[in-house]
Length: 261
Ligand SMILES: [Zn+2]
Image (cartoon, rainbow, N blue to C red; front, side):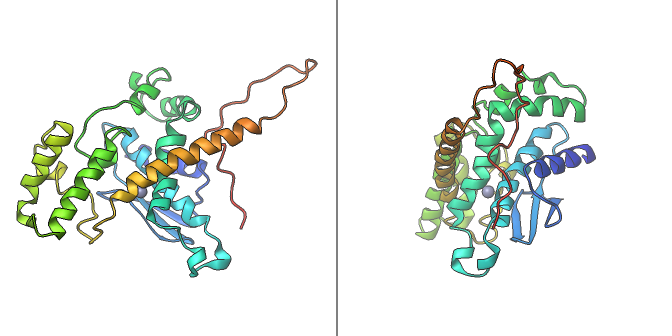
């Protein structure tokens, strides 16, 4: 666990998150909270799978960087606040699902994983992109791939509407959950821990929040495509013949230069 935590911390720093203004701690459900000058991110560690904690930290780092990048001169003014939670999720999902599942990032990550942990062929350079971009049905929303992720969101939105509309009683939620996820994804949760008790949103009253994830994912895709186009259009000129060309080492976060406010 200590090795995973150290690795997660190093990656967050590599993504330009300074721990002078941030903390990383363990929790049952990963989250980001605090203020632009005191950001708290959390993750959960899985002994058998270092990537679970890692991608959760990268997601929360996206949130943290967005908060840190808000204009300090306008703090506590509407213009100095986040542009809504869909925008917030676009920043975290762009980091987690777009930038950090790119060939450039995974090509850089594979040898770093090999140095930090015991050798594992699953984390080899040839297999890592397949592992990180595979499509597989699962019970847990935060671990879902981009194809099945929206099903988790649609499903929760339907349940929320039924709960608020009085068509579904809280006591009947576990049964409705299990039937609903089976209908959408064809898998039935073995218990409520990986069913209706996952996530923290309903426990803290965040009803109506889940659509932000899908809206954020759609915005993240478009923002990343715009960033890629920008990078393609601003490539440095080709080297002259007199100088031998040395290909640069892939930079994992080329678009994340520190913001100036
Ligand atoms: Zn998020």
